[in-house]
Image: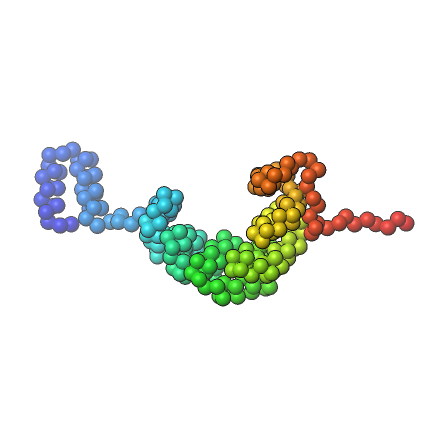
Length: 244
């Protein structure tokens, strides 16, 4: 502790009650860097989350960066740091963090979605296409084909986008709304209003309470009601046993 503090504290300990004097001494030690200079990690994350929510992406990067420096294995925080980088227009820095996070959790769709966005923002078109095609062919999940379809459309490859989205819907088997909505968006983007409406009606068949589906149908001038939905093309037909 600097000598100037010692003299002041000596006087204070004489004139103040012991408990108060001890508190002041401990606080002075902390302020002078003697101990307790690091925030607990949960506080670092809390501050980073608050900064991100407030749109202070530089502060969020600082907090999340401190967290991963102190705990490098925290791949979720690397994802949070990458989100702050993307929001701040620093896509290449985001890719570096996501590459590390995906080494630990290679099937995490949140990480993969953000990686695709960061690569798109960074202008890495060829690398992005190669990555998405490989993920779809090697893993074959609905989410992988949806991601390939989304970014193929963004990159101007409509044929590949359509094929990928249809494959996603086929793998899904007409069970969930997401592939149908993705197809509806695609057909809307190429001006095929009729097929767009059909796919929305299929989504409505799957989940008539889905607000996104209902609002999109209303926006197209439709009035969804019981019986309005269409059985998805990919939905398996019921199997009947032959009569004996």
